[in-house]
Length: 342
Image 1: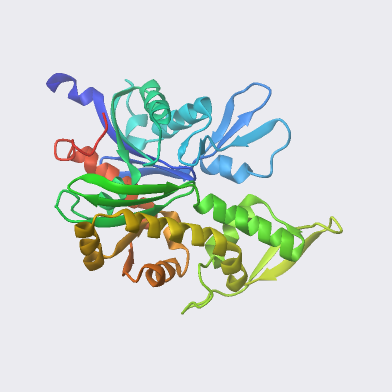
Image 2: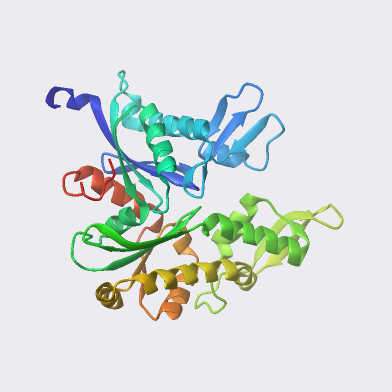
């Protein structure tokens, strides 16, 4: 090592279904949607991240927007590799280098991932000049990012609601004791809203509009202390074909998302029922931690708290909890060696 250390850069990546975040030198340097726009004729990638997200749902037949990750795993190998590559090239400190540095990377993966999917992530990273690639399970990274001391002989329950998957894990002694990964998360919520608008208002809205509704007035329960105002939604009328606008409230969105949230609740209850009794006693005292973008849904913490009779805490910056935990692992590789998968 020694002499060649200056040629190696360390980065931590949270490869998410909805967003990709990269930490370099303890700072989040990339935070962009995991979307790629590709030219269908030449096969070249035109745009990635925010620029590609702006094109989503507005392209003509020669441009296609792809989300290379589905349910937290790589669905389109080629597009994901190019996307990671372009994101890494966007890191300000690496732009100035005339020599392409080799990279030491820590990448987080869903806990329900198979060996094949794990290899796909690893190979993608090796192809973008990753010399040392370590993988870490998302709930583990989320726990570290929230500030839980995972090495203690004490049980902690973490729920990470991302774009593609919801990861529920009980962690103790630097390992996952029992976990459950369900494919119900932000994307499913968005689709629920699209479906609800179609069936209840005869209004056809796109994914981007549904996402906007979810962020502005999305709710998990109908009794909120600080309810958001009603929102105007524009789309296409399914009966006449004309563009039209309707008003919708958070109560309607809570109805639309109800079934999906019920399934998350069931998964949480199932994980709790598999927890060894000593750890269950710890969880009774410490409560449940929520991370990931989905945990920002209004009233979700309250609803989970009512279902489990446990206190539920949301991480202070839930969107970045996972990548922050991955960054901490990168800095203390020797301490977290047992958590990482080489």
